[in-house]
Length: 74
Image (tube, rainbow, N blue to C red; front, top):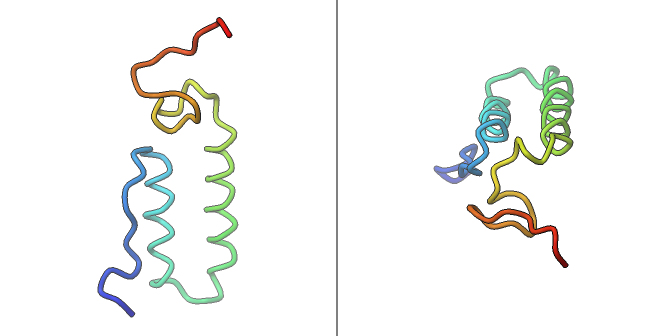
């Protein structure tokens, strides 16, 4: 196992990063608790994917750059 195993790079989205930090704690849990934790983590990530677009940093919304507004013209 490499020395950086279990570490994640920040995504820039605080709520996603918090979920990933909790996922990194799996090694400390008994294997019998892993399925329940995976279900919790998955539910939290799905909630982030379903979040209102205005709550997601602009750099993480496809087709938008930070500081740019969606234009109504096509």
